[in-house]
Image (tube, rainbow, N blue to C red; front, top):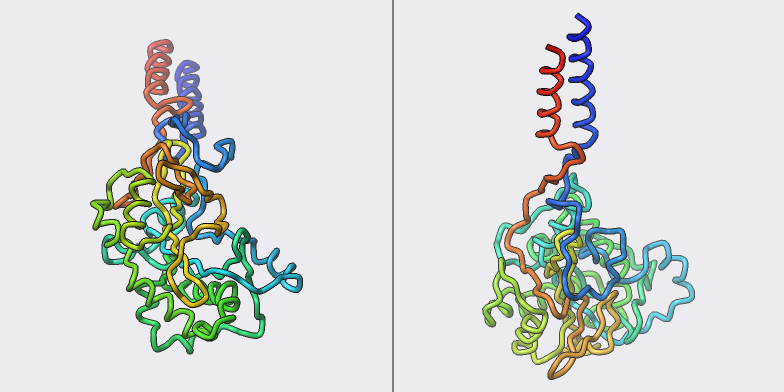
Length: 325
């Protein structure tokens, strides 16, 4: 009787240990990060498994910007037009928070608009330039369907209006400095015009750069320069556990007269000019490593090296059963 009680207690204890030791979801197959020869521009000592956040603007937070609004000079030099690759955005969000919903566009190979950001050379911002220019979704009704397609909030239809409001209040109110963008409808309509004119999937496809491929940053940069004749800014997010850079955003720049120009001299988060044979590339990606251009959001993976693998629990239970016979 005592041996049976002991066996029961042992089984319960092993079960509890196994549950406590088993991570239910983790992007990595192992505890160790895959090493690469060259590290990204941002230090890998960061605690985050992903570096860079595709949906987050490079400038200061809403609270900081509001606090410094009265001290800001609202003049700017260039407009940064940013397109994002939704697959990378969703992958990053999902790994940061497995419960985060993300809605991919119905069409494949479909880049979406992130924003139009008025920016000073060698600085970030300005932001929130006109508090009196409130956001009114009704003003966008003539182009609402196109905005939902080309400028969606990947977090879902319910939050799309929030994205448009955020982009208008933070960036659009600064773009109002020029007549071509001096109201809400003009600002968003310009984004749609640029999205139609500079279809990033076609630009990359023309140089045989397709989703589900690995390419150097130089190859991506050359493809864009070949098509546009101007220097872009190329942005990645870095999966520290696997040592993989994912293509995240491509940004191109325009003057106040809405002419396409080089992005040289524009400060864009952790992207910096990197010297390469024949010129420079503005990027935060690994210059010496391949950048993955994903076609599908990878499935969640579970760690294989649990602290107490189930096979060991099974072996322990077999031993206890033999010992108490």
